[in-house]
Image 1 (cartoon, rainbow, N blue to C red):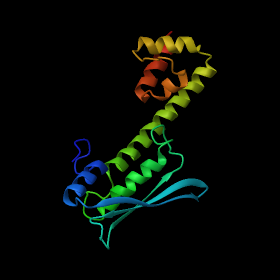
Image 2 (cartoon, helix red, strand yellow; image 1 turned 135 degrees about the vertical axis):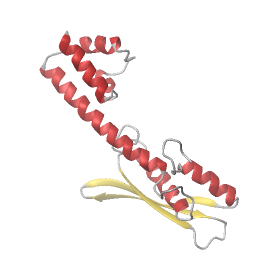
Image 3 (tube, helix red, strand yellow; image 1 turned 90 degrees about the horizontal axis):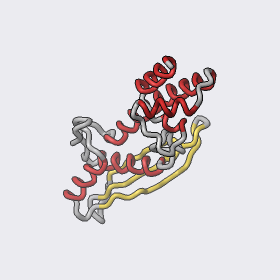
Image 4 (cartoon, rainbow, N blue to C red; image 1 turned 60 degrees about the vertical axis):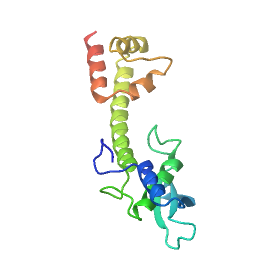
Length: 178
């Protein structure tokens, strides 16, 4: 069980338990479809979990994710994310789950989407402010460096987008002071 989300199991934990209990079992991706729903593109994955080669009632699971993914973590891995969720749901239908059928991966994905959306909004607002106030990029980079934020050879927008709301507020405050 996960320490971060008590009662939830990752798909990897479910798979391990499933194969321990069912050494001849298999988990298969049955279908992958791309659909447009409400003007948005989605990938739909259906998975089957067989307890043995002759299992006549395999566990089934379905998952649908936006294509492309909505954040930097799922943007290029939306099919894999949907497939993992479908596998986890197929296993959950056979009783391989913690306190919820939703997998820890699904819970974390929602939390990550919410955090990224909030950071992205704060980052966009900051960049709009910096442009309207004509704050030189070099000044922002130097201030970030003084805050201990490593730039490397990343673009300024990428670095600002990776900051927390608190860091963005601190950065703006330091720039306002100077």
